[in-house]
Length: 429
Ligand SMILES: [Zn+2]
Image 1 (cartoon, rainbow, N blue to C red):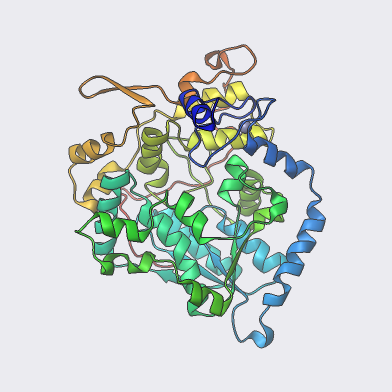
Image 2 (cartoon, rainbow, N blue to C red; image 1 turned 135 degrees about the vertical axis):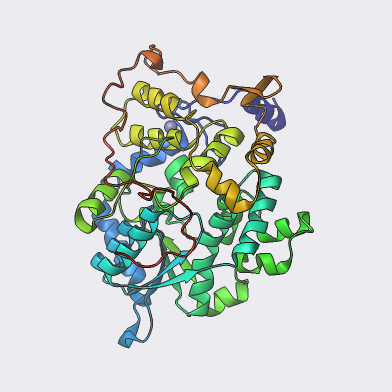
């Protein structure tokens, strides 16, 4: 068989990992070895094999030259939000590495009350300076309309802003070191070994964070967009990066990364607050956004045949906290739940709900969705074909009492009678 034929064959028949719930058609790219185990699970095994205390020593040595002498400048840039791993990253940087970070955050405009609160509490608890990037909201709407139409993403501006603003800030303030949390490509699909100590690159941002779509490609596709709408999303040029010597490192290469345990520590230590979602059991991530675990997650299911709950379930299997059958049952329970807060998005973007649904349907991947009759869709994504792995069907798995898989919501995303996007959030309390 030629390479081309074998590629076509593997595309026609994606394979499941025998351990987690990922498949070989994972959008970040994933391989399955002779024993049927995926590259993500194999790299995860390093977490129990590597000597993490010596790796912490490597990190300390790595950041030492960046320590600013005489308190004349910040030691590093740390990208944060009102959710994700922000608390844990700042905790490591400030409390354990004893660095003085400049926190930076991109205002995604889909902010929840809890996200604003968590971000303000982060700044207060850690006593850090913070820079917030507010891009002109009309430009953000134009960019979002274009990205939704062209590649079925309402989140392009958030991903672009979150990944570029820290780099622009590093250049502008002449702070060469940027410290990120875990590398998604390593964590999910084992793109690199921890031992490669992969660093931030322009290429990964374009290919994976932005699904191959740089600002320039939006500009060339849509004549409705102008350079004024997009310039803030552009990566600094190589000369500016070299001039400052900008380097971005990932803490996940030096610390045994376990989001559930980390969030629970942050909840008890710094009063990070979590909230329940309709479409997954993990209450810890993305509580700052009305859309990530709702509309954005549904679009992921449309385009890729699986959604965030599969990421969460696979991660929990790898950490040994969920058995495959129970994990699959959880995926099936959550992934078809309707997304909340669509009306807020329609109001913000200025589209009618049926027009939004029409645009969304254009991005249903026919590989994972069948349309037996107009307006009716049949899901044939990953979870419909996955096996429980022990000869039983996941439908029979005992998930009684496991709906939360041990995750605890300490708050709600928004307590107001009529929630709305908090476009500019003031401090807390
Ligand atoms: Zn796997």
